[in-house]
Image (cartoon, rainbow, N blue to C red; front, side, top):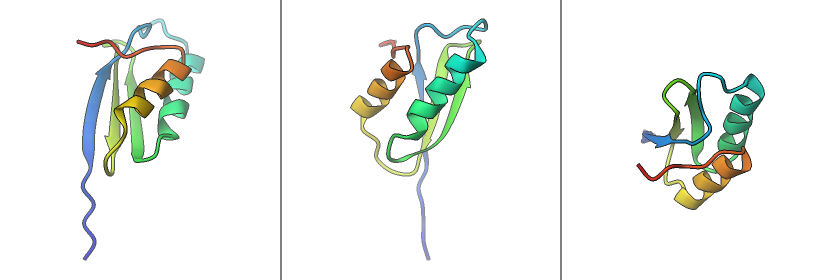
Length: 77
């Protein structure tokens, strides 16, 4: 039997609002889905949150780097 454990983590992200364009939302998803261990990404512009679904340990630094590469940053709330 194979068991896979998933984890859902949510980040508060700057420069994310209901007015954020589709290109920017796609950039966030594209950067994050390339991080090893991330299997899903949900971006919520109205709340300024990005949720990632992982199937194992994921480097916090890689997540922050990916969000930075998309033109945003994680807030420390």
